[in-house]
Length: 422
Image 1 (cartoon, helix red, strand yellow):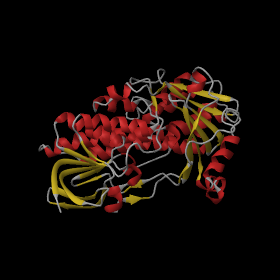
Image 2 (tube, helix red, strand yellow):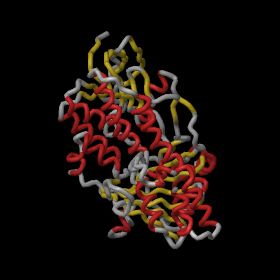
Image 3 (cartoon, one colour):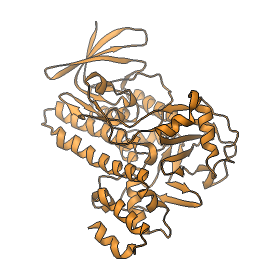
Image 4 (cartoon, one colour):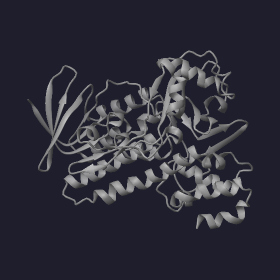
């Protein structure tokens, strides 16, 4: 069996693996990327948030992506009945990008990998990792290509960016149950033949049908739109009785007063995909010679589009730390990787939990709006969840619940809000 040697092996060529590879290629590292799928491939995660733009820029991918004219996303809209809450990323607390993209991931990911290949990065598609062992300071990873040929890769470090494949968590038995209640989703794409002109036609929206049930609408610049229903798993299973995902998604569209006319009778471009109990977690995010990034470590919920952000944040951070380590620097992975990532994960976990309790929905849909609260929440929705100057980051575990209580009990928010922040 043949064996090749690299500095760093990256498993997975999605956003996390690509930003890691882009960064490492710029440093002159000898890297190898292995990807199980053939690109382009269909995957969820089509709504980005502004924080990811920092990562694409640092990884040298931003220019190539910017040339593709993906649909610009300047904010997000949440709908509940007749009440509409719009978050404008240019009106948020603190610094940071004020726009990002809505993307067909098949096209988006292929552009990234094509760019990396042009830069000289070695990427093997349709290649599966079947085993890994650690010998001293190196790892030996066994891979099988599409022809069934088996080979090995010796690496000083392995970054697992395998997403839902969760390669190392499976091989090293690192999976653990998520802290979040089980939710599932069904989604597809449609030709948006009834798309309105102007902003309304391009606006990403989350239509709240019930406290735990919502429809996503993500328009793309190619004229197609992604439609998805998210709910507790029992509700989704009921919708998709007999495994008919197309009928389930059509039923979901019928539940939306806002979108039922726009998407009535629309044909799906592919059989709707059913994602079951998608939240995931791990017992640890790193070990001697490896780190887990993106969905391979933790995935929360699509409601605030945080998945790709955590993928790229952890991917580029793991690449930086791994490169420093193999160049002789002592790295405190617990502090610099796990604790750092966990701070951001904890913030978004709170927001996801408080969305499904209804407390965050109370903040979003209460009228009149409090612009100070809205700006601080908007910074979180933009992905700047490590900025602890923002009290909605620093005090995330109590500020949403406290303000929701004030609003529901008709207490004067302006008189109490400073106390809540302290």
